[in-house]
Length: 153
Length: 394
Ligand SMILES: [Zn+2]
Ligand SMILES: [Zn+2]
Image (cartoon, rainbow over all chains, first blue to last red):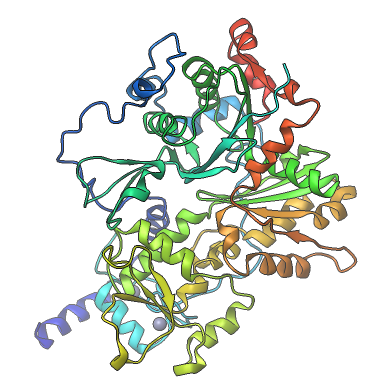
């Protein structure tokens, strides 16, 4: 990477500033990412799994059950509702508070604290283009080189 | 038809605590995991202990955002849990106590009732919130009337006030920070600062468990963590497992370069306490909510005033996050500073905060009214599913 070229890129970036909506979108995406179960692909995705892994129902010593156990696929079909659907449905089931939505903790009365987006220590400064916090020139440099406007939500 | 034992399942979003009430409970991962190293089969529940190389584990969880969503996964894991391989039971003979999340959605409640009566042939069923069992457990031990139950689990942290054994719904508070957010945030931070570990939820969860603590003075610890050399008493290295000589990593002191032991390590500094800090200050990562101590005060202030004193004196903590060293002391100190001086504050952390609700199930079985809390298969068949909504106070 030549200095002249990266210098020019930096000049261009300096003039770009994320608007408030973009900043909020970015913040929301970061919080949503904390809900994810996996960040990589199913390592067995390319395998064809035998349909019935493990056969517990068959191996139970005493078949006291009259009927055959229903497969897990049956339950997938029988009760398939997404989280969003369930929340929506709840407005009918529990229309008045307290309910799932209403018991969410309210905002804190303590002032927000700010930490450097790079090193995690308390920060005094705000990055002008993107609004991220930083603590020092060194961390600002890292931030500009790695994040800042490198990816846009 | 009184029974001397029952089967108790505290069906958590990350681990289920289960077993016959007369025995010690088992703690079983409530999920299916797939390994890169073993392509022949997935690992269900505790089978993961047989996995030689746990790097890059892929999780399939029945729960999403604290609610049972993926029923096929849950059915597979339950079949495993109730089988000889794990903790066998015949629900035809043994009553079942099973926990559900607070404000569980109607269709999930209906599915729970249906699956246990129809699929597992349950004869006697008690569906209940884990916090109810925890309150019951606590009152048995303390003979108190009012309790504040704090359940800090995988998906959320719930604060639930109880007045004379009944949850006071208007005072319930949910903080959207639990063990999952902490692990994912730690993963994010380490991946940005040091080494890409985004695929290593299982390992980084262990790093969190082995390295993190709750700070008693956050800003003072931040200063210590910025010091150099031996003055920095917080900085440590975490030796990562390599699955040949080391199955689980551990935290060790920083060694000098020349003594380096050719181990792959993660440098743990302010991460050690700024991760659990999110339970106390969710706004540190932009979640606009109160933390636990402030939430406890908010919850108590929503209750009738005459119970305030009693509630402050009986705060009980349980759930995986309460295992962080310093969790109880920090909670106590913060609540103490927020409460009026003339009130006593008492915060207790049970010996085993993971199985505390499960143990509560053992106590509730001995309640003379136990069977009046339950629903029988006859009732279900005669009166139908709708009765379950009236019967169980979920
Ligand atoms: Zn910094
Ligand atoms: Zn920036």
